[in-house]
Image (cartoon, rainbow, N blue to C red; front, side, top):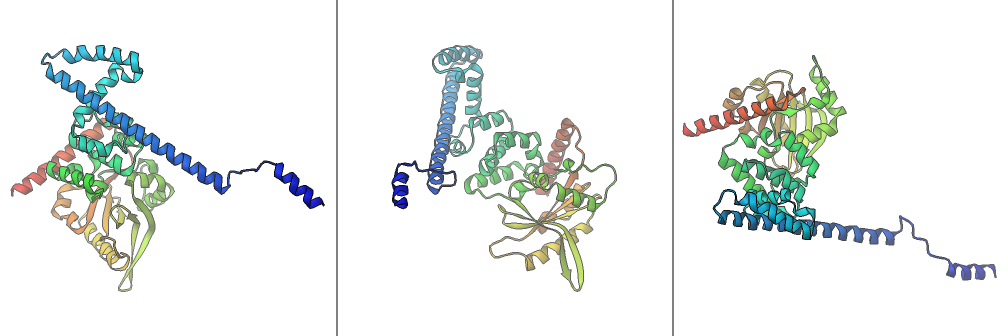
Length: 358
């Protein structure tokens, strides 16, 4: 009798749906997914609209040959549009749209970018004068899905100027960026940098190699951020045994995009030619004993306190799959760093040009 009463009462009680209820989870996932798709679609359409507005205004300005026409038409147009559609069409934003159309004149390229980059992303890069540098940030942002904050941080950290790619001839840079756009396949020249900023390790005055390793392990998250997207830490002091002799590789990583093991050696001194033979030994051992089916050959990165470009060039390190870069534990003022990087890029391009002529 008691069970019958309980059953009758339970019919009138509301069903309790908890946060871990499968039905609730599934419906919530459907809603969140739909919201994300809607937000992506709205962003893409707004970006396309701003580009089209920029193209139309630019065409109008170019049609009228008076130099002051653009300065006269934008305030007037902005006033009318803002009254009807709000502050999103201020004179300042209209100028952004015109610059947007100038910076990204190829609608086909823009169509691929606008699905991943927001209007805020585009505003951060449209005023970069160097078109190759601008395309680099746009494509890397698309591929690695950087937030606006991450993009601004990488630009502020002079990422492009520090990539190996920036030191290549213009045609090589154009080819690599075009290949990235077409295949989404990243190249080592886009991954590796010079110099690397290790100021977050907090190393001061005198220290030994073990101090650097210990600091990197403590600050692994920051070190991975400095290395770039795609790196995974595997092992410290990797033992390599040959003919009953043990050698120890400082750090071993794997890069998902390159599909390669990356061996890293840390050196307290300026680069020395002997470092090449040591790294070649490590890479050949890794290729024979650690490389899995479907992976490409391992590559090496030698991080030195200083780097001698002519020595590195004559040894043709890249042919052996080895990169050499300087690390900085203390950063100079940004304007000095920019000047040094600019000079390094010019020297590298000049050496390549001279080599081509020979």
